[in-house]
Length: 212
Length: 297
Image (tube, rainbow over all chains, first blue to last red; front, side, top):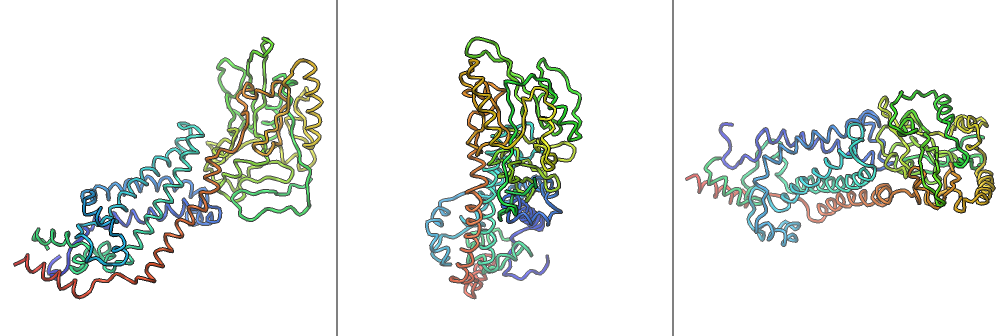
């Protein structure tokens, strides 16, 4: 883009944003169809997918798709998500975090500790979900697993699904709470002030790269 | 006898009966009387209009080798050395036990795909089945099979269509030795007791009735010559119960997950209400602008 205002920083490439929103749509569809099988009161959600049998057919394929799409996000973002000493300090001051006292927190790079926990939490739950999901995918894999293994898989799948839905809720809430965040994933850019307030170390890195 | 619903899968509200208490029915399979003729298997296929594939012989009489979506009942043959040193040929007619506490119904996520009538019969309702296979995981006896043709679950219906019009199951009707009988559960228990007395007199000191309490009793019962060792009858479960994993999955996990997700969302709402949005202020923008100019120059 030409003639960018001087106090605007690029945060996500177009590819990263498309990847993120495909992933988001898939995870929401998986949560809706999965919860329909999980709780009788939510079975009506299968109607969104063309009925119970169609939801049963689509759910695992969407799971395969989310593994591919999250794989894309993983390789894009993993290098920003390694844990550091500052992250441990940030977590110790979680009281300052929820009370928006950013000035008391260590300077944050591209991601803060909470975002890194969301990232790694997603990695772990998606691995648990696809593994247990294959064990439960009777249409293609019924003969490879014992019934008791499938029972374990059902419990693990439900627990991991609960975990990832809670992680997504936290992720969405954080984006709503911290104003100026969502534009990073829609238009791809954030204001300098936003970066200064929430990701100062990242701002300094970006500026010293001399780029934007 | 009208088939009133007692339970309906994946339904929070109870399925009440309008006609009051119904007599429970049961099929009694007296293994000591079975001659292994497979008339029951043939009758089951015929009444239910099913076709089984022509299989291959693997050196045992079991044919087909396992229950299938077409074979809802199966004679399982075991050669066992009994307590007195005699070789015994034990033939058990396997199939749905019609548990009073059915694990399949508990596991089923689709409303009304599995029902239990007030007479005790547990039935699969094809129209509502979504083919997920949860009933397979719920069943303590490994009975339901998913069809490769329509991906729906099948098992013995206890001929609910025949029972509904006052007939006994097709297998019982076909059995030439009356090893299979059908009637009220009370009458079948009484009949079993006289058979067990006979068997004990003939030296089967451990003869007994198989009506496992772990699943609330069943509406298909066996007279076993060796009731102390049901496993020797082709792996009949000794104390079958719904797996604790299924109990957890379909029990505690549901409210825990729903409350957990709900509370997470609610925590967000309350946090926003009390703390308000986290906004970037003018100082942040100025500081950022300074930082960016400083490096640029």
